Image (cartoon, rainbow, N blue to C red; front, top):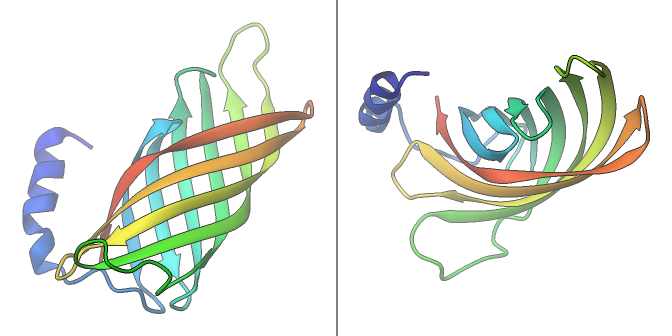
Length: 155
């Protein structure tokens, strides 16, 4: 997304509604880190959600896609400014396609994400930080690590 389009989206965001932790709440946005890309989240209830990402790793020269099931712990953090703080943990899978000319291949793995999301009061946004430990299973078994910071707009 180009910078002017992102700025316009953020300026119009207050007209969209408030980022509520409720069944059916859907957020789309970006995550910056390793890898960086698009992020989406769908709440099934106040505690349960699915998270997905499409991203690119500059270090690995690879395209990544992941889907996670997340369990949130509402009410476990209080006294840190306005809005709602939601720590979470989950489990998911990832698919990757490496672009290197000498060893281009596809792979599968599992991930264990942990993070913290902040839903500011009276805002349609959430801000989050996440770390994901994982294991690449195919074509070779080896540990993996990812993480980043992001923002999502709830529609």
